[in-house]
Length: 279
Image 1 (tube, rainbow, N blue to C red):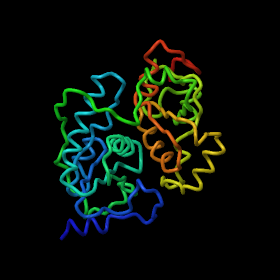
Image 2: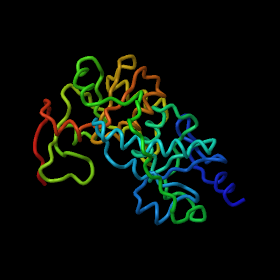
Image 3: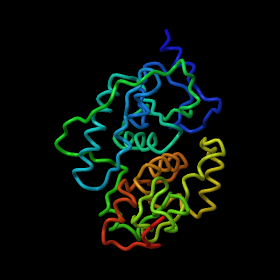
Image 4: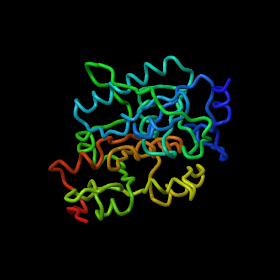
């Protein structure tokens, strides 16, 4: 009975119009916690599994994609035992969006992000986490319908609408990444990229804006709805969340370069706003 109460009562005060967000946890839901393993073990929603492996960066190599696929295969196997999948992190953010976008790319249905900040969940619904998802043992990586590799981006630079969703400071080459920048890191952007800061998607309380408000912002940024679109950021997480939004805003062909700037900066490919960062 207590578990059913959790599912009924863990809800946000702000209802959402977005189909990939959910305001309360339905019965028979697999709960996936995308926060760090340390945070999960300290406290999580009762019955949730740790999906902390989604926080790791993933690039275009077969080895990296296989590692990602082995994790997602374990998630899919677990999901077979539930009617719904509900994903959460500290907010509405990066890593829950990354996981949902990837699961959608593998055609998993009935998966959602919990439309609630973790700190708002009542203490009575929380417990130390003890269910950690490990990797399966696939021989070959999955084929993700909405994920593209570095070579694909390189070959299609002039054919697509390439959108950089990092902050303005990252896009302009002032800092290499939003959090914990390392001295000696390469700043810059992929040539030809258009800037749209993913933080523009949120209101002052950290909740996703309405579709009408976001469509207005997208239009003012000169983003073309009908043009094939590739998103990137530093490590692909912010891009995945933004891609979920664009798809619901009826953008026709939206893909994510998962390796993002983290992968591109390590190559000999051209870079704009190039500089080496030192604090």
